[in-house]
Structure formats: structure tokens, C-alpha cells
Length: 124
Image (cartoon, rainbow, N blue to C red; front, side):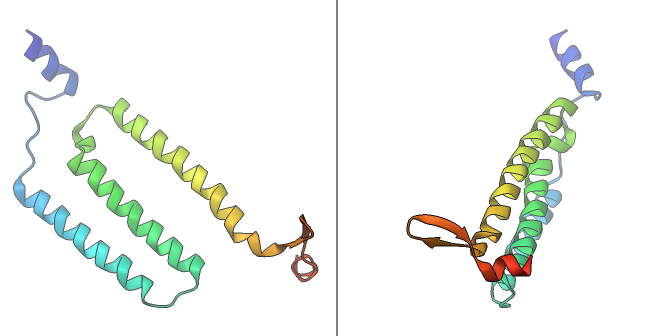
């Protein structure tokens, strides 16, 4: 009876079995995306576009790992919601860190006080 209830909760009759070819394809994709990330670092792009490309590739890789290797693709919707919520909170944290780091050049240290740089203020 317990196995019947378990199968009913997931909406199918048994465990989902993913073919090995899918895992090998995901593995190959992850390897290619890793090469892309390393390749972008050698292009000499400014830091902001380089960071955006690296984060975009990392997002795709994390999605593939979560969907297939963590089996979220075939899991209960609540677990997917919890995973996405955790990712959203982490992304919002990194957004504020990125804003902070990108504005570091707008201030300078003067006798233990921080003052807005005049040239940065004029550019605003």
C-alpha cells in the first residue's frame, strides 16, 4: 500500500529512469560550457561583460546539474520551488555585492573619512 501511495504522489507508476546517454550528453555540455568560461577569460573583455558571461554560463550549468543530476526535473513541485527560492535569494545577495563593487571607484579615502571623488560626482 505504501508503494502505491508513493507512486500516486509523484504522478507516475514507478521511479523515473533517465538513460545513460542523457547523463553523458549533460556531462559533455558541462565540459563545453567550462571551456567557454575559460575561453572568455582569455578574450580580455572588460570586467563587467566578462562577469556577466561567466555568470550566465554558470547559471546554465547550475540549471543542468539541478534538473538532471539532482533530479529536480522529475521531482515534486515544492522541492523545485524551494530550490528556485534559495537561488533567488543568493542572486539578490550577489546583485547588491556587484552594485557595491562597481561603485568602489566613486569614493576615495581622505584622512580616515570617505569622500565622494569630485570627478566621479561630476560624471553623475
